[in-house]
Every structure is written in C-alpha cells, then in structure tokens.
Length: 321
Image (cartoon, rainbow, N blue to C red; front, side):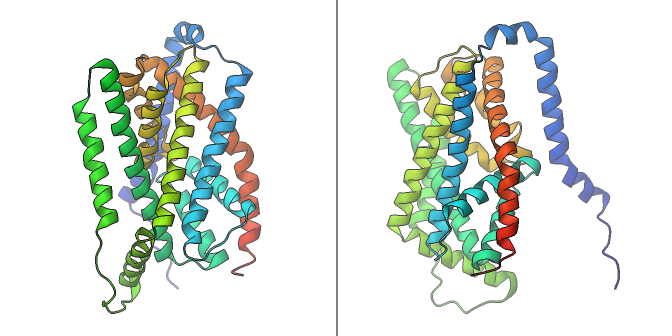
C-alpha cells in the first residue's frame, strides 16, 4: 500500500498559523505587562473571593453549554446522563484550548456518533440551531443595551446598532424561511450529509418548544458572561454597571464564532478591549480584566478537562447502547 503523501508547505503553514498567531499575541501581552508593570500592579486588587467567583462562573458557563447541547440532541432521541453531557462539555472546551478552529466540535460529533449513533447530518443541524439562536439572541440583547445606553447618555452608536440589527434580521430570516425538502430524492455521499443536515434543521426550527429552551439558556449564558466580566473588572478596582456588563457579555458570546486561534486567544481579548467604548475603562485595563477571566477559565479547564476526557474515552469504548 502506498504511503500517504506528505502535506505540502502551504498546508503545514496553514496548520501552524493559528498557533503562531496565538503565541505572538501572548508574547505581546507579556511585553506590555513587563513595560507597564507599575501601572498594572497599582490597578490590580486581586482577592481570593474574586478569583473563586471567576472560577465558579467559568465552570457554570461551560456546564451551561453542555446542558444546551443536551437539549439540542435530545430532540433527535439522544438522552445523555449528567456525567456524560458535563464531561463532554469540559473535554470539548479543553480541546478548544489546545487546538484552533474550535476542534472541540469534532470531539462532540465523534462521541455522539459512536456512543449514541447520532448521524453527522443531525449533529450539524443541532450546531446550526445553536449558532443561529446564539447570534439572534445576543444581537437582540445588544440592540436593547445600546438603546438603554443611548436613552441614558444621549449617545447612540449607530454603526454597531446597525450591525446588530442586520445580523439579527438574517438569523430571524433563517428561522422563518427554509428550503422544501420533502419531495427531493435521496442522495449519496456528501450530498446525503447536506440533505440530512437540512432536514434536521427543518425539524429543529419548527419546534417552538426547542427554540424557546435554547433561547432561554442562551440568555442565561450571556448573563453569566456579563457577571464574569463585572467580577473581573472589580478585581482590578474598576466598577462597570449591568448595561456595560451585558454589552460585554453579548460581544463575547458573538466572538466565539471567530475562534481561529486556540481558546480564541486574542479574539476574546479584542472584544473586551473594543467594549471599552461602553464601559468607560481604558483599553489597557480592559485587557487586564480579560486576562484575569481567562486565567480563571484555564485553571478550571486544566483541572477538570483531563478527567472528563478520560471518562469520555472509557465511555466511547462501550459503543452505541
């Protein structure tokens, strides 16, 4: 049997690019902290209570995503135990921290297929519902928060408001409209996968109960993100109100779709720095608050991710029930 051809130079560079980008961003952050250490040391007022709260909220964020995934796959008859969906959430988050391009999605797809027989097409449908509902809900929250801030301050950021409105309208159109698939013939290969995904999407978007449950959990996830950032800013001696926290939470939820680097390193921080327009905190201190939040997440994922991955490995060996 002929050996597999080695990947070309461009393929190798493309695989390494996200890691290189993450490393450069990390180096830049270290250099900035070293150069402005006096400012950093004066700003930070860390306490065990702040870091414990950040760790607990980070864990809740991960588990909430796991519960949301359980609700989605339950629509196709998959019923995971608490230990299964929580371990899957922790293990996939650990994978996202180690690999770029949200590689944890592949882990979830493989586990659900091997352990519960969920087809890739149906899994893709659940993923589409998760993404569309996350973008729609957070776009609406972003519009409400900007309107609130505009009423309170008399200043409205029309470009950002317009982006939220256009993106939200696109997601709403995707939910209300859809191709008719009932009379189409069955395909083979990748066409069959696409057809199964579209059929699964049609089933999900027509379930008002499922959409309500997903929307409710997305709102809760955004609220937890807002609390995380409020605690992170409080840890550096800065106080932001609920409106700024919700704006931050909505931006961070939306930033997950641009995760080209491991753990979205740099993407999440850019969203936090951009939010300084709403929080009134300088970009430097906003970046520091984001670093504290990430540090708490890394501790949680580093401690619980490996045991969760080991459990999934043993559970996958059992095969489909």
